[in-house]
Length: 205
Image (cartoon, rainbow, N blue to C red; front, side):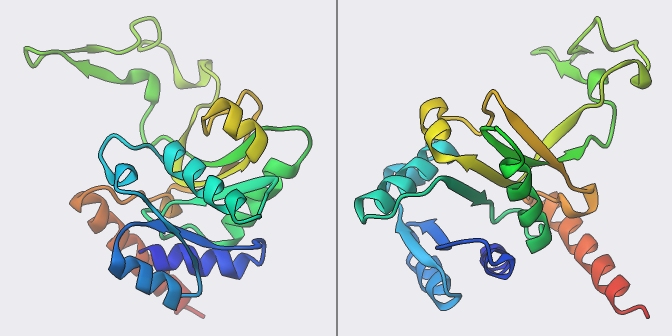
């Protein structure tokens, strides 16, 4: 899936370098074949406790050690292969639209988020936000969620905050149809269906 992210990054024509971070030899070979550069990820950053922030800062550190400094870093997660080059351009444009710490791609919730239920240890459920659960959706501000695909951060503020959610954050709304984030088998089936629908639509006159 990561080859889609590499291809879309190249297609956007925005980047000085497209870098794949990995410790896997097979992925390294595939990334180089796709025209990407490599960040040789350490074993520590392959662990379950490592975060995306840790990996991004390590990649920036390597770039700076090799004499390359950037104002803006864009992180494209391989688990979001339906994100397009146009989406990437839009997120970067949002980040560059006035004073901001950065921008991320978001999408709308499939169900009203204020009606979330939390499960207790005994298997029961109760409202996550009791004061909000009974309110009409149109009585609340519009809510969106990070779709796990695209982040454009100003390096200086990102390093200071060590977060993809700076105080000054803009968002680019992507439709749910392109916001599939593949983390498990059910997500994979959703991706397969979405890709099939997109293919069928593109074949229509």
